Image (cartoon, rainbow, N blue to C red):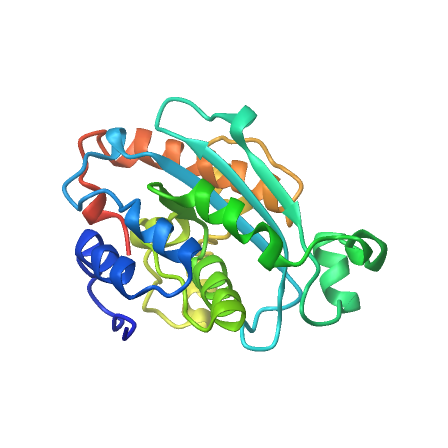
Length: 239
């Protein structure tokens, strides 16, 4: 099965149907058989799942996942009791820099399970949900690469990227940096913490997968409340 090309989002329900037939691993087959919402589904009706992963670095081909956080929610409620969090043993060594970011140490991963042992739980939690992330190349890229290494076939799923939504609202200014400084205009940061501040959301400790998943869920709720009516079709937001 060829991966979809970049550009316009694919017809995700149709793609899931194809992937369900092509998947060799039964865990992947069940994930795709659960399907996904159609592009015209109103955002208020979509079953949302905030996802965050922490990694040993930023290159999915060389680095590995060390923790994952999941928080199911909708536009009105965050279901914290159903949240999930895993620390997993990475396929590569921890670096001092990565430990500084996510504070997961060698002793934390010493008895941690491999991703393969929690993969079925992860896919079951994701099945039928519309995943919400902040910066999709990390979450979707690392999960696809990790599953590809484990099973020989990748993982595809639609996401709403709250960073991408902020980028739409705050497009990069075309003036050179020196001219913006001369005019006294600062570039707008679309990082998770800075984006939350614009909506009056409280600061959380960064680089913890569960906390960042919760922060992302709250950010989408705030973005929707201010910029997107509940009837907004998810096809206008996902990628």
